[in-house]
Amino acid sequence: MSRSAGQLRARAEAATAALPALMLSAERLAAALVPGAHGQRRAGTGEDFWQYRPATTGDTARSIDWRRSARSDAQFVRDREAQVAQSAAIWISAAAGMDYAGSAERPTKRDRAELLALSLTMALLSGGERVALAGQPPRPGRLQADRIAETLVTRPTLDRDDDAPPVEALRPGQRVILFDDFLGDPQPVLDYLARASGLGVQGVLMQVLDPNEEAFPWRGAVLFRSASGAIGHDTRDAAGLRSAYLARLAERRETLSQAARTAGWHFGTHDTGAAPAQALLWLWSVLEG
Image 1: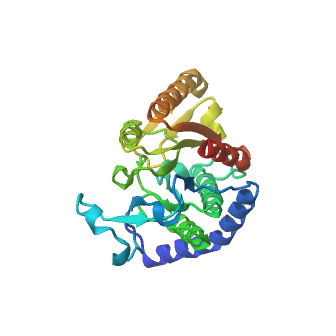
Image 2: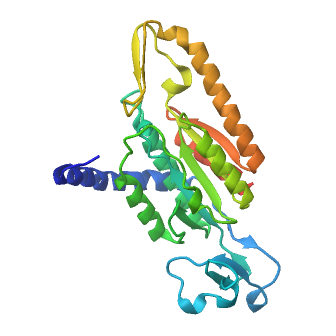
Image 3: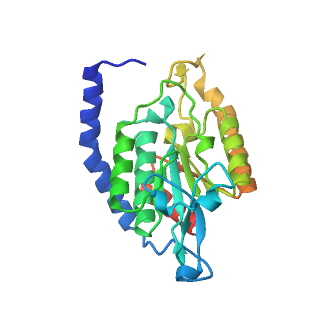
């Protein structure tokens, strides 16, 4: 979708204005948690211990173990530490439907997902972990939270109803947190979980919905249309669709929950009418467990 320079500038200005509020809200939520050390403690200390990890942007040529790297297509760095920081990757769907809010008093699903993601990022970083958005190199430190926040508020929304996490960005041993409404085609997510399981990647699926999507409150004549406009359904008896909709929603959740358990992941739900701290505390508890 093409946009004029004026439209792009307006979005950039709006994003810049939203950044301090997002950072402040995320800091308050993260402060409610009591982060501990997240490094993986392993046998051995100092020079007697090492662990290989894939090289990332910022690693020098001197730090790369060329002998280990020669045995594969990737480059590896040898960490000589008794405590090696874990890395976490976060993905938020950019599908058009994530911009939905059933009331002006509630945030959009995207806004709530971004708040939860950034709050979790700050908590993980404060515990010594390296964090990144999926597909980007993980880094430690407060500046990384600033980078992630800026990326979140400036990225465009897609003009389609579905989005999928990048399978190619999965790395062995990392932890991944996916935020989406998961109302689209579930197959890409199921394929992602299967691939993640094969790589030893653990993580969380967090379904973020608006209360209207949880309860289906509509009655009478309603024209339902997807956010992109690609799908529509006109009915004169919306209330008559409620039972079937809720059954399909429950079925979808069971499918995702079962797939998550099989892959060694967790599946959770959150609606934007609830306090974000509830979801953040749940995310923290399952990641810590």
